[in-house]
Image (cartoon, rainbow, N blue to C red; front, side):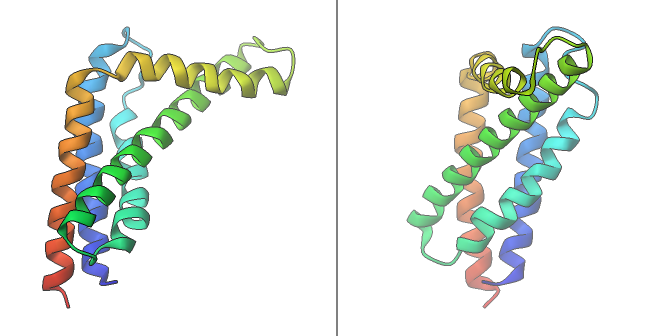
Amino acid sequence: MPTAAKLVSALMFAGLALIVATSIVPLYPPGVIGPNFGWWNAALAVVIGWLVLGRQAGHGYVTAIGIGLTTSAALALWSLFLFSFAQMIDRSFQKVYDGPTEALVDVFRYMWENLQAVAVQEVLLTLAIGGAVIGVVVEYVSHRAR
């Protein structure tokens, strides 16, 4: 697959991650989300955009929309996991857990709580529409780059 499609996918998903992260910050109490939250998500989005959508571009526009939505879902799940894992690490330094198993189980509890906090219409629509539009743009780039 052309590198141009992978690069466009990575950069556009980084932009989408920044937009979504900015809309998520007000959903949490002050101090819960650090100042680099958006940039960490953008870095994650570069990797996911390159690996998921970027690799599969070139199979038609309808497929591209589906892969764009899949990439948005992958970005959301990995972001939830990493943010929840960071919360667990922060709490483990406070000696909250009796052992590593309890800490690891808590990651999934945090994921559930964070999912409930961010699963609002604005965030979900931004991810869905953004993923679909990025899929179409990347598909276009993949055809033009041949």
